[in-house]
Image (cartoon, rainbow, N blue to C red):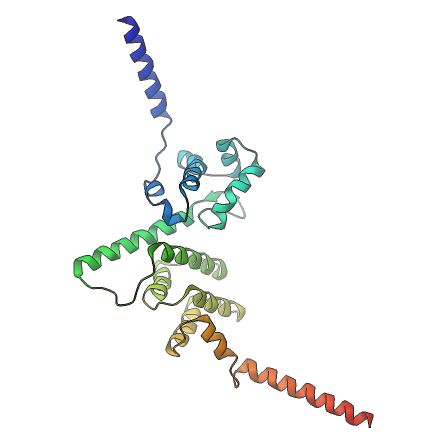
Length: 247
């Protein structure tokens, strides 16, 4: 009898020890890891990486090194794929690591689900063929990071919704939106309104791909083309003058 009692007490102590080492994770990390473009092994490793973050609300390279029992150099290599996918971000000043990229993806997924529920309730369908959820979320995440990096500020909810509208409603390819951003930056006009005006102009002209925009840029009569033609003409005239001078 005493042996059974002793065994039960040990089991209770063991269970209490297990429960005392519990960390609360968002269930979406387990249920929807594929939305992050991760396989099961990568998702499990991500949970290990984020353990200190959900334990104390902060995450550094030293935390990851300690959690995984590896050196900080090895921790950098382990962290690299998650940084490349922009799921995790390292602050260039404090070097603390955040999971804003993960939050953005799950937020967009949630918004998409709410829209689908609303469509199901109202019976209205979008005539344009939408992207697959996974593709849409990936493209949105990439564009959000590009815009925030180049414009130097966090996108407002209205701006985020505008980018989503370009992809979903207007069916613009991501590379076309990236090109508009690039041209605005190169012209020193780092503002959302100017980027929107470029895309509006292209849409009104009927351009739906980056190739169409580039082909239009190369047409005779365009600013870039006329300058290059004028320059070629000046070079040709200079060559003729050199010939006349010789004779």
